[in-house]
Amino acid sequence: MNAHHIKQFVNDLWDARITPALKEYIRIPNVSPAFEPRWEAAGHMRAAADLLARYAAGAEVRGLRHRVVTLPGRTPVWLGVVDGDAPGNALLYGHYDKQPPFEGWSDGLAPWRPVMRDGRLYGRGGADDGYAAFASLAAIAALQREGGALPRCVVLIEGSEESGSPDLPAYMEALADEIRAPDLVVCLDAECGNYEQLWLTTSLRGMLAGTLTVRVLTEGVHSGAAGGIVPSSFRLLRQLLERVEDAGTGEIAMLTVAIPEAARQQAAVVAETLGALNTARFPWAGSTCPGDLAPPAAVLANTWGPSLEVVGLDGVPAVGEAGNTLRPATSAKLVFRLPPTLDASAAAEDVKTLFERDPPHNAEVRFAVEAAHRGWHAPPLAPWLVDALADGSRQHFNAPLRTMGTGGTIPFMQMLGERFPDVQFAVTGVLGPQSNAHGPNEFLHIDTGKRVTACVVHALAALATRGQATLP
Image (cartoon, rainbow, N blue to C red; front, side, top):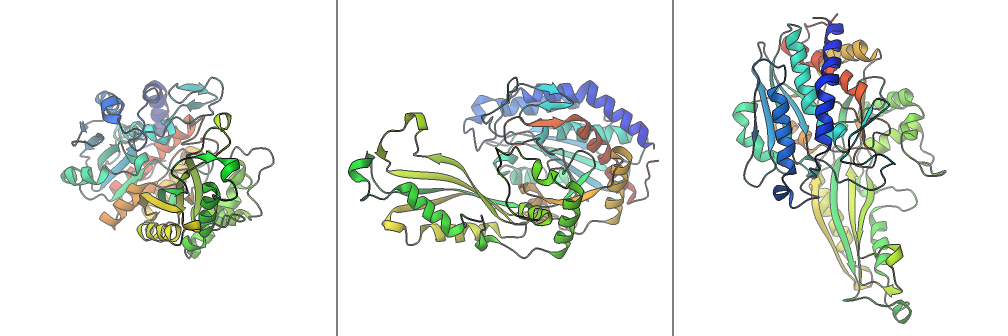
């Protein structure tokens, strides 16, 4: 096998087939079920899954068996299986559902309009995580073309990840005989610290989502007549949030965990590698800054520390429509990011209890938990996998491999870790600086997509030989 040949094959395939398919995919507004209750009637999920099936039908993968599988009332999955000719079972995972469009896209850009600029493909879902199916098939095809030993490969692309993967456990059970017990999981849904090298994710934060509602009246009243007697529901909501989060520092003491020493050492390397990019990657407004965090501490705050964001408000009119009314209630949609090892279910109970007990002014207070997903901390990495990915990074990025924790959540990783405790994980991705997954102007860095695809070939080859394969 020859790494240069693999690179050329992958690049040509991306240019000729993958990028055009991704443009077609971006046009489909298949918003995840949590944000579109009528997803089944809309038909966009099925359209996206069918697109994957059409692409696979023309893929240069020998022996590929594939189909769209739909369980009643659940988003479809696309499943592909290649038996291979060597030991090992690889599960290559991704998702095709998307986040809502969001506002604030730049001129000429839109969530459902694919636009190529400066090597970046803009549009919702391309980087998170529509490219995964195409890249996985390309990696398998590249290894076959080079004549390398190929392990059994299962490609599973789900349609509910952005909703917390509620449909996935049912498919894991229904397709257990085909999926089998993986030796290696390849997940292409993660971040990359920069676009100059391969980044291997070793931990993911958990997530707790819920809606906190404070009600003080049965209907709105004149703010002049009631102000001073009737407490503001927003003020009381602020008080309740202070029970959990220090407004001055953002600290959430009740949700912190002991950080492993290995994670601290890793954070120091990441901080040194990224330098100012670790914080400069965000679109700061004016002179806004992250505070006085030292670079390694900033990395840890984003990967092992808890955080809270109010992602939505109800009961609050738009500024241009607001009257002089004391509102009866305020509801805030809260999203907590949780440390990788924290028990999310226990955290949800603790937060709910803290919010609802002894409500200020005896107001009606309710915290409705919508989702609680535990984070993930990778098991020790096998030397054959580290060596293979390090070789891939050198060959295709001309830079060393880096490992890091990331701040997002991929529920499937924890599910798999519990189900298959001996599996190895290669979790990586293309979500680098300014790629802005979930937000406006999301883009896929095409060259990074190509290079990550080529690196997956190294991982599959190493699984087949447990480290004996080399790509000169």
